[in-house]
Image (cartoon, rainbow, N blue to C red; front, side, top):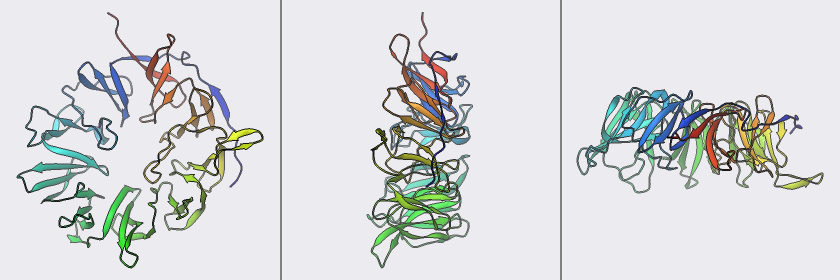
Length: 395
């Protein structure tokens, strides 16, 4: 790998910029351009200008994985629970930015791979499932009694993975809606469908185990099922792979190794940049170097993080990235404040924030001490400037 390019360092003061006050009791993070806030017993949506949407009776569902409220989804829709409806029939519906129900609140609704799965119990034995796309258009329906907790997994508008209802050992077949054909029950799990690639694990009979590979959006195998460890998603035509020794590298969409598996850790590319770790913490010229680097798609090192390390780093490398979509990465070091590395111009912005969450919609939820030494929350942009601060009205 080639050597790094040095970057500029800027120190941002919390009092250098004017901020808009959000008079709320609590707030989460932005999702798809809208923030969920709590005012008394009520939830509200606020856009990136700080304007509150005129939608009443908002009651959001928690994510099954994180417990965080499922806020605004793509194209201005959100899942809303109506507690006045019968629990047995279902209480979930889907509303738009006007607050109107496009799907009435009489179902159980979950999200899977960017799709809505609408579940309705017509009797104690049979459940009907309907798959909606991100515009809430229906693309598939089925009525069955499944044993799996994930009975159907939408992969594309034309391909649905359906669990084997006769087996406790969950395996899936692929149903091609337009063609009316299906495969055998040979698939074990699926990752994200991204940039035209469906990540899947398939049972390899002569080896007696599942291995990972990729299908295209026609269901054709484009990268054979040869990977024991799940690969990452394709971005910038590259995906992380991990060998049996636990070392990581990158392949291209032709399954050619373009960055050798010599890395301790590696994460997916965003805008031509990826975070990797080349060695564990060690001293270099009397100073600690934690081994983290930013590389380009050729594997060239464009920045050496030295004593810094990512503030937020997922264990599931094959699902998530460390670099934000707005081309930033949040770092921590020996100082109490966190830093923002702007990969557009390689500027390291040191802040006084004690916590910086992932960016969404160009803003990140931050925590800091105010001038009264009280913990405060707000939202900052990629320059480290406070845009909004949480406030209480004085009466």
